[in-house]
Image (cartoon, rainbow, N blue to C red):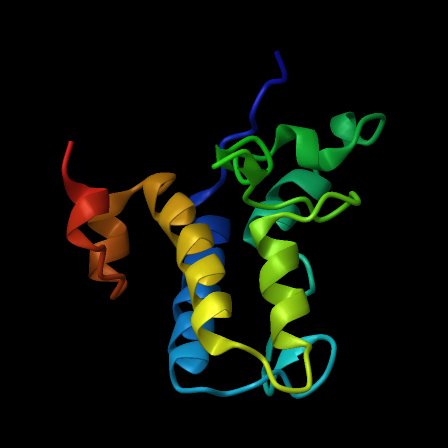
Length: 143
């Protein structure tokens, strides 16, 4: 079994904030402005999870995704994220939908919410996150 690298709070917070904002923009019907993502909010670039793992030099001999909780979480047999592979994860599905000429925001939103739910469930410090303005949905805060 692959060892999952625990994310630092700072990297977790950057990912959580990124996806909270992505959900707000998707709910508002804002399309991607280019293949990178929203205006001022690149989505297809590495997130805090990627940054947390990619700079762990000891893991360069393997696929960095193998050490990430987002890559190792499946919902309905679909990976949450697979940044360095060819599988169509929820992350990949969100990006492809948002890159369409006329994205289906409802479908894209469902993918983004799955990603954020997994990120929320992996929070290393809920008390600090709440202080930093993260509002957790009820279903992710109950034991």
